[in-house]
Image (cartoon, rainbow, N blue to C red; front, side, top):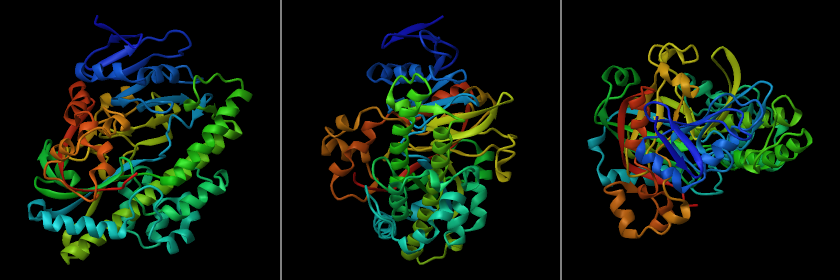
Length: 480
């Protein structure tokens, strides 16, 4: 039996690409992390294992607490963390994260990617920026509409923005939860958060958020790709953003509220980043209501951005949406807590930097993907490939969760030391929108793990089936 010691924690090999930390001290359950040997070495440089161990001490936690292949240190639960809690346990804002329902949406087309010269790509990203504000704190360009429908959006999700003219009702079938997490209640949200939300629907934000024009470079599973509408050489668009300042303010507010509540309820929480209260407490229920509002906001935000991106293509190519064949493939959430049934038990599954991946035949798949399993989307860093995968029945061991991306290798401060020459070399021929590389150098491909290696971890374990690889042609980012 292979054993390794990392940061003082004992890791025991538990099959292909899986390492277990047996419970000790205040841990109530074991923790596991899915990494191969090269990714395991990166765990020596951050605090993600400590954060998994801390999460394993929370009341009601279900075995095991899980680290994804793209795991890296976060605030509270590591990014790339999955934690399931039984009904009598706690809910944790830190186990969802500050960017509530940060997620990814993939849109396919009937267009051939090779038609798009650099000149056309520059025109497209310029036009996309005309419609979609980018960067921290930017306000949306649909404020006259989104303020009116804001209450409807937070309670009813994407259906509300479709009623307002953004997209088609058929889109709902291709969004996790149908674009609406039940249980939202705006009365649980602070006025400050509401003010930020009303202004920011339809905005991209900064950090790792992006709009990427992509080419389907490889088809890795022909039958599934065909059912997802993907073909080699196809032009696609990927959108990665979340609930913006609305979700961030909710997370900020409830981290304080749950931290204080834990003391009153006599719950020992190892660090403020895991601030938690009983699920059935007033504070716990209010957090869920507020979080669900942010989830619905984020699904709606990506819906509006998709509408605007397609408008930009219509303007530049002088073709209609129907002529270009744009269609939503799927939209997945990365930072969320949801009630699910696993092993016959109802539990609240917290995913932070992790993607749900239901296998073929699972009843919670949307009808279009009932026989295939829904697509799970794994973006790489800008400048590198992204993947579409499907979960298998073996994904039950991760609460049907897979990694949400490549995962950071360098902190943002470390990445800012990357030189202009190194940055430009890492980007290759990819067209990007920002004027100065310094605005996005912390998002350089050099700051991230190798996405091929990360994706291979679950593939080798039989948890995922890779369907297609997409490469970036042009990327729209927002400066922090």
